[in-house]
Image (cartoon, rainbow, N blue to C red; front, side, top):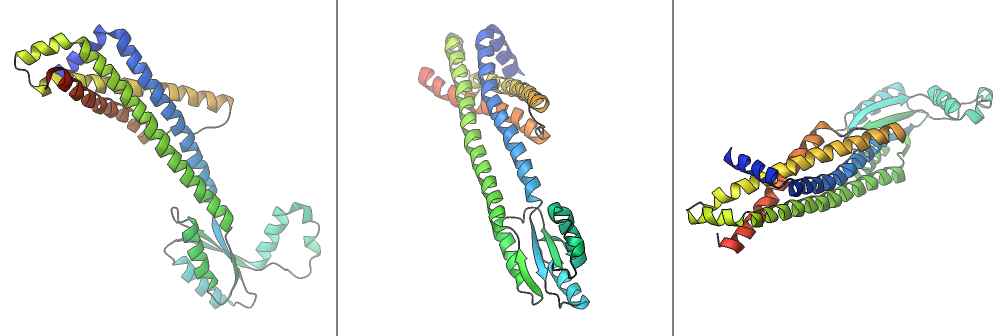
Amino acid sequence: MRPFREALLSLVRRPVLAALSVTAIGLSLFILGLFGLTAHNISKALAAVEEKVEIVAYLRDEIDEAQLRLVRSEIGAFPEVESVEYVSKTEALYNASRELAEFSDVFPDVEVNPLPASLEVRLLPGRRDPQTVGTVAARISGYEFIDEVRFGREWVNRIHTLRRIAGGTALIVGGSFALVAMLLVGTTVRMSIHARSTEIAIMENVGATAGFIQRPFLAEGLISGLAGGALALALTFAAYRLLDRAVMAVLWLPDLWIAAGIVGGGVLGMLSAGRSVRRELKGLYAI
Protein backbone atom coordinates (compact mmCIF):
# COMPACT_ATOMS: atom_id res chain seq x y z
CA MET A 1 0.00 0.00 0.00
CA ARG A 2 2.95 2.38 0.65
CA PRO A 3 3.85 2.74 -3.06
CA PHE A 4 0.28 3.62 -3.99
CA ARG A 5 -0.10 6.02 -1.08
CA GLU A 6 3.09 7.83 -2.07
CA ALA A 7 2.09 7.82 -5.73
CA LEU A 8 -1.28 9.40 -4.90
CA LEU A 9 0.39 12.01 -2.69
CA SER A 10 2.82 12.79 -5.51
CA LEU A 11 -0.04 13.26 -7.96
CA VAL A 12 -1.97 15.43 -5.48
CA ARG A 13 1.09 17.64 -4.84
CA ARG A 14 1.45 18.23 -8.60
CA PRO A 15 -2.18 18.34 -9.82
CA VAL A 16 -1.43 20.30 -13.00
CA LEU A 17 1.31 17.88 -14.07
CA ALA A 18 -0.86 14.89 -13.14
CA ALA A 19 -3.85 16.28 -15.05
CA LEU A 20 -1.73 16.98 -18.12
CA SER A 21 -0.30 13.47 -17.98
CA VAL A 22 -3.69 11.76 -17.63
CA THR A 23 -5.21 13.99 -20.32
CA ALA A 24 -2.37 13.34 -22.77
CA ILE A 25 -2.56 9.58 -22.17
CA GLY A 26 -6.35 9.68 -22.39
CA LEU A 27 -6.31 11.53 -25.71
CA SER A 28 -3.76 9.13 -27.16
CA LEU A 29 -5.80 6.12 -26.08
CA PHE A 30 -8.99 7.90 -27.22
CA ILE A 31 -7.65 8.03 -30.78
CA LEU A 32 -6.81 4.36 -30.42
CA GLY A 33 -10.33 3.76 -29.10
CA LEU A 34 -11.86 5.51 -32.11
CA PHE A 35 -9.79 3.36 -34.40
CA GLY A 36 -10.85 0.27 -32.43
CA LEU A 37 -14.50 1.29 -32.79
CA THR A 38 -14.04 1.71 -36.54
CA ALA A 39 -12.12 -1.55 -36.89
CA HIS A 40 -14.75 -3.47 -34.89
CA ASN A 41 -17.61 -2.19 -37.04
CA ILE A 42 -15.70 -2.90 -40.26
CA SER A 43 -14.93 -6.40 -39.00
CA LYS A 44 -18.60 -7.03 -38.20
CA ALA A 45 -19.69 -5.70 -41.59
CA LEU A 46 -17.16 -7.94 -43.35
CA ALA A 47 -18.30 -10.91 -41.25
CA ALA A 48 -21.92 -10.26 -42.28
CA VAL A 49 -20.88 -10.19 -45.94
CA GLU A 50 -18.68 -13.25 -45.45
CA GLU A 51 -21.66 -15.21 -44.12
CA LYS A 52 -23.17 -15.01 -47.61
CA VAL A 53 -20.21 -16.81 -49.14
CA GLU A 54 -21.44 -20.11 -50.53
CA ILE A 55 -20.66 -22.58 -53.28
CA VAL A 56 -23.41 -23.35 -55.79
CA ALA A 57 -23.08 -26.70 -57.56
CA TYR A 58 -25.41 -27.06 -60.57
CA LEU A 59 -26.65 -30.62 -61.12
CA ARG A 60 -27.09 -32.48 -64.40
CA ASP A 61 -30.71 -33.26 -65.33
CA GLU A 62 -30.07 -37.01 -65.48
CA ILE A 63 -29.17 -37.35 -61.79
CA ASP A 64 -31.54 -39.67 -59.91
CA GLU A 65 -32.70 -39.61 -56.27
CA ALA A 66 -30.13 -42.16 -55.03
CA GLN A 67 -27.25 -40.30 -56.64
CA LEU A 68 -28.54 -37.00 -55.28
CA ARG A 69 -28.69 -38.38 -51.72
CA LEU A 70 -25.18 -39.80 -52.06
CA VAL A 71 -23.65 -36.59 -53.42
CA ARG A 72 -25.43 -34.43 -50.84
CA SER A 73 -24.38 -36.72 -47.99
CA GLU A 74 -20.74 -36.89 -49.05
CA ILE A 75 -20.43 -33.13 -49.56
CA GLY A 76 -22.12 -32.51 -46.22
CA ALA A 77 -19.46 -34.70 -44.58
CA PHE A 78 -16.61 -32.46 -45.77
CA PRO A 79 -14.86 -30.99 -42.68
CA GLU A 80 -15.16 -27.46 -44.10
CA VAL A 81 -18.90 -27.66 -44.83
CA GLU A 82 -21.59 -26.30 -42.52
CA SER A 83 -24.69 -27.21 -44.54
CA VAL A 84 -25.86 -28.42 -47.95
CA GLU A 85 -29.25 -27.30 -49.28
CA TYR A 86 -30.91 -28.83 -52.34
CA VAL A 87 -32.71 -26.42 -54.71
CA SER A 88 -34.96 -28.16 -57.24
CA LYS A 89 -35.58 -26.91 -60.76
CA THR A 90 -39.02 -25.67 -59.73
CA GLU A 91 -37.60 -23.78 -56.73
CA ALA A 92 -34.88 -22.31 -58.94
CA LEU A 93 -37.50 -20.95 -61.36
CA TYR A 94 -39.60 -19.56 -58.50
CA ASN A 95 -36.56 -17.86 -56.93
CA ALA A 96 -35.58 -16.37 -60.26
CA SER A 97 -39.09 -14.96 -60.76
CA ARG A 98 -38.87 -13.24 -57.37
CA GLU A 99 -35.33 -11.91 -57.72
CA LEU A 100 -35.69 -10.80 -61.36
CA ALA A 101 -38.90 -8.82 -61.08
CA GLU A 102 -38.43 -7.20 -64.49
CA PHE A 103 -38.87 -10.65 -66.10
CA SER A 104 -41.75 -11.79 -63.88
CA ASP A 105 -44.22 -11.59 -66.76
CA VAL A 106 -42.09 -13.93 -68.86
CA PHE A 107 -41.77 -16.83 -66.40
CA PRO A 108 -45.45 -17.97 -66.48
CA ASP A 109 -45.18 -18.46 -70.25
CA VAL A 110 -42.11 -20.70 -70.05
CA GLU A 111 -43.11 -24.20 -71.19
CA VAL A 112 -39.81 -25.91 -70.35
CA ASN A 113 -37.91 -24.94 -67.19
CA PRO A 114 -34.42 -23.98 -68.39
CA LEU A 115 -32.91 -23.68 -64.91
CA PRO A 116 -30.96 -26.57 -63.38
CA ALA A 117 -31.34 -27.99 -59.90
CA SER A 118 -28.45 -27.17 -57.59
CA LEU A 119 -26.78 -27.70 -54.23
CA GLU A 120 -26.06 -24.61 -52.14
CA VAL A 121 -23.03 -25.37 -49.96
CA ARG A 122 -22.27 -23.14 -46.96
CA LEU A 123 -18.90 -23.36 -45.27
CA LEU A 124 -18.11 -23.14 -41.58
CA PRO A 125 -17.03 -19.79 -40.08
CA GLY A 126 -13.28 -19.42 -40.39
CA ARG A 127 -13.25 -21.69 -43.48
CA ARG A 128 -14.44 -19.09 -45.99
CA ASP A 129 -11.05 -17.84 -47.16
CA PRO A 130 -10.28 -17.97 -50.92
CA GLN A 131 -7.99 -21.00 -50.68
CA THR A 132 -10.45 -23.14 -48.69
CA VAL A 133 -13.44 -22.12 -50.81
CA GLY A 134 -11.50 -22.88 -54.00
CA THR A 135 -10.35 -26.25 -52.68
CA VAL A 136 -13.88 -27.33 -51.70
CA ALA A 137 -15.28 -26.09 -55.01
CA ALA A 138 -12.68 -28.11 -56.93
CA ARG A 139 -13.50 -31.21 -54.90
CA ILE A 140 -17.23 -30.80 -55.59
CA SER A 141 -16.69 -30.28 -59.31
CA GLY A 142 -15.08 -33.73 -59.46
CA TYR A 143 -18.45 -35.46 -59.01
CA GLU A 144 -19.84 -36.97 -62.19
CA PHE A 145 -23.31 -35.45 -61.85
CA ILE A 146 -22.10 -31.91 -61.08
CA ASP A 147 -22.36 -29.83 -64.24
CA GLU A 148 -20.80 -26.57 -62.98
CA VAL A 149 -19.58 -25.04 -59.72
CA ARG A 150 -19.63 -21.33 -58.93
CA PHE A 151 -18.65 -19.37 -55.82
CA GLY A 152 -17.71 -15.83 -56.89
CA ARG A 153 -13.93 -16.11 -56.73
CA GLU A 154 -13.27 -12.38 -57.15
CA TRP A 155 -15.79 -11.47 -54.47
CA VAL A 156 -14.27 -13.91 -51.97
CA ASN A 157 -10.77 -12.60 -52.76
CA ARG A 158 -11.86 -9.02 -52.14
CA ILE A 159 -13.39 -9.86 -48.76
CA HIS A 160 -10.21 -11.66 -47.72
CA THR A 161 -8.05 -8.73 -48.90
CA LEU A 162 -10.15 -6.24 -46.93
CA ARG A 163 -9.78 -8.38 -43.80
CA ARG A 164 -6.00 -8.48 -44.20
CA ILE A 165 -5.80 -4.71 -44.75
CA ALA A 166 -7.99 -4.01 -41.70
CA GLY A 167 -5.90 -6.36 -39.53
CA GLY A 168 -2.57 -4.89 -40.66
CA THR A 169 -3.77 -1.32 -40.20
CA ALA A 170 -5.04 -2.14 -36.69
CA LEU A 171 -1.65 -3.57 -35.75
CA ILE A 172 0.30 -0.57 -37.06
CA VAL A 173 -1.99 2.15 -35.70
CA GLY A 174 -2.49 0.39 -32.37
CA GLY A 175 1.26 -0.06 -31.89
CA SER A 176 1.95 3.57 -32.81
CA PHE A 177 -0.49 5.01 -30.29
CA ALA A 178 0.64 2.56 -27.61
CA LEU A 179 4.18 3.88 -28.13
CA VAL A 180 2.97 7.48 -27.87
CA ALA A 181 1.19 6.69 -24.61
CA MET A 182 4.33 5.03 -23.19
CA LEU A 183 6.45 8.07 -24.09
CA LEU A 184 3.97 10.40 -22.39
CA VAL A 185 3.92 8.36 -19.19
CA GLY A 186 7.71 8.08 -19.24
CA THR A 187 8.10 11.85 -19.61
CA THR A 188 5.77 12.46 -16.68
CA VAL A 189 7.66 10.02 -14.47
CA ARG A 190 11.02 11.59 -15.36
CA MET A 191 9.66 15.03 -14.42
CA SER A 192 8.42 13.59 -11.14
CA ILE A 193 11.84 12.06 -10.44
CA HIS A 194 13.60 15.37 -10.98
CA ALA A 195 11.07 17.17 -8.78
CA ARG A 196 11.81 14.68 -5.97
CA SER A 197 15.55 14.39 -6.52
CA THR A 198 16.42 15.65 -3.02
CA GLU A 199 14.02 13.18 -1.39
CA ILE A 200 15.42 10.32 -3.48
CA ALA A 201 19.01 11.25 -2.57
CA ILE A 202 18.13 11.17 1.15
CA MET A 203 16.47 7.73 0.78
CA GLU A 204 19.55 6.42 -0.98
CA ASN A 205 21.85 7.80 1.73
CA VAL A 206 19.90 6.07 4.48
CA GLY A 207 20.16 2.73 2.67
CA ALA A 208 16.93 2.47 0.70
CA THR A 209 17.11 -0.18 -2.03
CA ALA A 210 16.53 0.55 -5.70
CA GLY A 211 13.25 -1.36 -5.57
CA PHE A 212 12.05 0.63 -2.55
CA ILE A 213 12.69 3.89 -4.42
CA GLN A 214 11.24 2.70 -7.73
CA ARG A 215 7.96 1.21 -6.52
CA PRO A 216 6.10 4.53 -5.92
CA PHE A 217 7.01 5.67 -9.43
CA LEU A 218 5.76 2.39 -10.87
CA ALA A 219 2.51 2.87 -8.97
CA GLU A 220 2.31 6.43 -10.28
CA GLY A 221 2.68 5.17 -13.86
CA LEU A 222 0.03 2.50 -13.23
CA ILE A 223 -2.45 5.02 -11.79
CA SER A 224 -1.83 7.50 -14.61
CA GLY A 225 -2.30 4.77 -17.21
CA LEU A 226 -5.52 3.49 -15.63
CA ALA A 227 -6.91 7.02 -15.31
CA GLY A 228 -5.97 7.76 -18.91
CA GLY A 229 -7.63 4.54 -20.02
CA ALA A 230 -10.83 5.44 -18.14
CA LEU A 231 -10.82 8.92 -19.70
CA ALA A 232 -10.30 7.42 -23.16
CA LEU A 233 -13.21 5.03 -22.56
CA ALA A 234 -15.51 7.90 -21.59
CA LEU A 235 -14.52 9.93 -24.66
CA THR A 236 -14.89 6.91 -26.95
CA PHE A 237 -18.36 6.18 -25.56
CA ALA A 238 -19.38 9.81 -26.11
CA ALA A 239 -18.16 9.62 -29.72
CA TYR A 240 -20.01 6.31 -30.17
CA ARG A 241 -23.30 7.80 -28.91
CA LEU A 242 -22.89 10.84 -31.17
CA LEU A 243 -22.20 8.70 -34.25
CA ASP A 244 -24.99 6.27 -33.43
CA ARG A 245 -27.58 9.02 -33.06
CA ALA A 246 -26.51 11.56 -35.68
CA VAL A 247 -24.71 9.64 -38.43
CA MET A 248 -25.38 5.90 -38.65
CA ALA A 249 -26.01 2.80 -36.56
CA VAL A 250 -22.75 1.82 -34.86
CA LEU A 251 -21.90 -1.20 -32.73
CA TRP A 252 -20.28 -0.64 -29.33
CA LEU A 253 -17.01 -2.30 -28.44
CA PRO A 254 -17.02 -5.81 -26.91
CA ASP A 255 -16.61 -5.98 -23.12
CA LEU A 256 -13.31 -7.80 -23.50
CA TRP A 257 -11.90 -4.96 -25.61
CA ILE A 258 -13.03 -2.39 -23.02
CA ALA A 259 -11.41 -4.27 -20.15
CA ALA A 260 -8.27 -4.86 -22.21
CA GLY A 261 -8.09 -1.15 -23.07
CA ILE A 262 -8.22 0.01 -19.45
CA VAL A 263 -5.91 -2.71 -18.15
CA GLY A 264 -3.62 -2.18 -21.12
CA GLY A 265 -3.40 1.54 -20.29
CA GLY A 266 -2.34 0.69 -16.74
CA VAL A 267 0.21 -1.89 -17.88
CA LEU A 268 1.66 0.47 -20.47
CA GLY A 269 1.89 3.19 -17.84
CA MET A 270 3.68 0.91 -15.39
CA LEU A 271 6.09 -0.50 -17.98
CA SER A 272 7.02 2.89 -19.36
CA ALA A 273 7.40 4.26 -15.85
CA GLY A 274 9.68 1.33 -14.94
CA ARG A 275 11.86 1.93 -17.99
CA SER A 276 12.09 5.66 -17.32
CA VAL A 277 12.73 5.39 -13.58
CA ARG A 278 15.53 2.87 -14.01
CA ARG A 279 17.24 5.01 -16.63
CA GLU A 280 16.85 8.26 -14.71
CA LEU A 281 17.92 6.89 -11.36
CA LYS A 282 20.98 5.21 -12.85
CA GLY A 283 21.98 8.51 -14.43
CA LEU A 284 21.36 10.59 -11.32
CA TYR A 285 22.46 8.31 -8.50
CA ALA A 286 24.22 5.36 -10.14
CA ILE A 287 21.65 2.87 -8.78
